[in-house]
Length: 224
Ligand SMILES: O=C(CO)[C@@H](O)[C@H](O)COP(=O)(O)O
Ligand SMILES: [Fe+2]
Image (tube, helix red, strand yellow):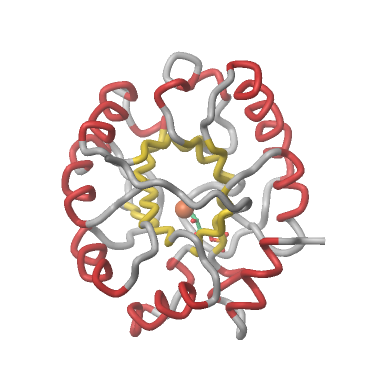
């Protein structure tokens, strides 16, 4: 059975991309204690995005350190090659990019066969229409509000109407699919993203870049 997510809104998913990699286990414990709901893990292959991060080995090493669900954001070409590996390493949510495979339906099916929550991510320029025929299969859609590849980038406000439109489509189609938003989320940008309809906020630098993780997470939960 796929994991059940908490019913709170918004759910906060700190991205460890901005954490101190020399003590990742401690960093993960700290955000868990500070009120995070999920742990966001950014997987980059140096091809789909111009950066490299880590693979399933790091995820399985972190798994015993926390009970937070693992939200794995695959920024890799042909993600279907590695879905089983990430599922076995401890992923609970697996998100692939629509732009990274010509076989989106097949890749989504593979995630579901692993009994994980399935998501598809869209780059800032990618229209929602690519999801037309798979939307009812998805547990969540991840709307990128920066060009993927790096933490600490500036939020792209032109993506806000896309979140609003997606929310309306989901309501119209009666789908329970969650909207996750990733990139440049901080206490200033969170409000407009939530007003547009986001359910899950990913934040790297706005949490791990701050001294007080609890304060940073609270500010995202109820931005003003
Ligand atoms: O997927 C990505 C970047 O490609 C993100 O998850 C970033 O790690 C978010 O970092 P901030 O923009 O919040 O600093
Ligand atoms: Fe991400």
